[in-house]
Image 1 (cartoon, rainbow, N blue to C red):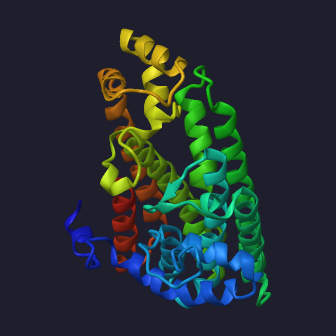
Image 2 (cartoon, rainbow, N blue to C red):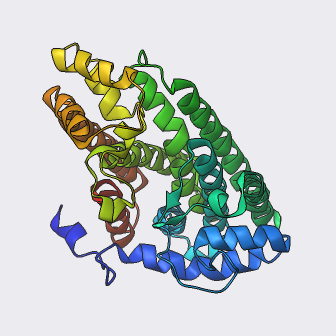
Length: 349
């Protein structure tokens, strides 16, 4: 980490201060937007956000990271605009992100998020899907509240990104149980499922601040590359992450037989360990002992897949840094964006 980045302000939790700023600015916008939802839907959404418990009583839960809204706010400042100009875009990308999380938890049958039961386990599958649908629409309504040419462009960018996210998730579902998929297939899926929305987040603020098409394109490339690096880090955590930080069992992706990036890299290595791992994946999961999980982790590591995942994340960070240099943001914003990028790739949960 460069000396310039090390001077970027950090919050009390040791995370980039821009994340806390984004959460502070975003909360009133989300409160105002969610007030328009039907009461039953709003309750599910507020539960998902950690604002209330299952009975609807106010509570304080660990907030989401707010990476996407932080990117939106910083992207406006990167082109000498203001965070205020980007706030509607920040809210829209966060609402879109939460729509995908509500649906993903159902599709993946995840029972816990942020150390709490997921919305579908509390309210049911149908209501959780409806809440996700409502957020997808609400994201667009937020941008259309005060119509302007820049907001129309921002909305079109959000809609394109959302279509890519849906396409990426569709690939993810199609790849389940398919041990023939390649690392290139996995990277294509990651570019849609994660890269597209981060690319939109990193450029939507600039759109709302009246940036040039070139600046918007470079910021979008910054975000897209960061998104792939983010997902690579997430896949790493899915195997090597600590359960007290991730909120999920150690090597959870292996227990679920998820063909994440480390797994597809290991399977494609063509070694004896690759063959052993393939045999492990062909057996039904759910009853694995700790010895079996440890052996599967060792097989992956012996192929060099763990190292390669880290290399891919760093390569994508280099692409992101180059795109940001072309934008030429003010020095403080440049350092904040790089600090945020380093944080999302190096995080432990």
